[in-house]
Image (cartoon, rainbow, N blue to C red; front, side, top):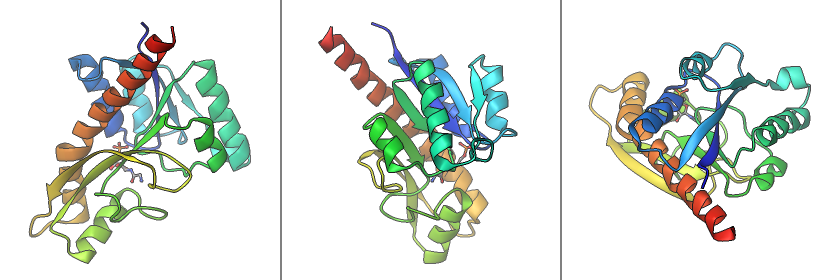
Length: 206
Ligand code: GAR
């Protein structure tokens, strides 16, 4: 049976995309294959990572499309053209509408750099999440991979991993530790779990 076809949606540096590419090479991710990368930012370094790994990549921006609806229509067209079965949001800094999330119910996963339900939802992204965790004074934070529904960071949790906050941490040192010790580990693991479930469903239907 064919592997689950994965699209990774990115906006920036793409270290989580790199973790997925590396997991595919090492075999941690073996039930799915990264078939497409889509960036909503033409100068995202993630596009270079995709090119170096020989993965087809596209840039689709809301600005070029003119509206959220047209942007999501263009995303859906590209995903359908590549027969994508699982969408991984890996640092994708755009909130998707209910129309989009319903279209791909239980087929979109996201990595978020905190232990949901802390420091999540609208306005909590990237470094801001770690700034908020340090301002609150938590001693433990981490990362979460969850299914994506119409509520920002509100879908069912798939995996979480805790990471200690250390004295003297800055948002940047904390972000780096959360990435290295949590995100880059649980995102590939969750992608494998969901890819394997989708692959088994296909086998069952045949
Ligand atoms: C990651 O820390 C990811 O968890 C976060 O943005 C960073 C992207 O880094 N995503 C969010 O905050 C989404 N709410 P990357 O481009 O190097 O993977």
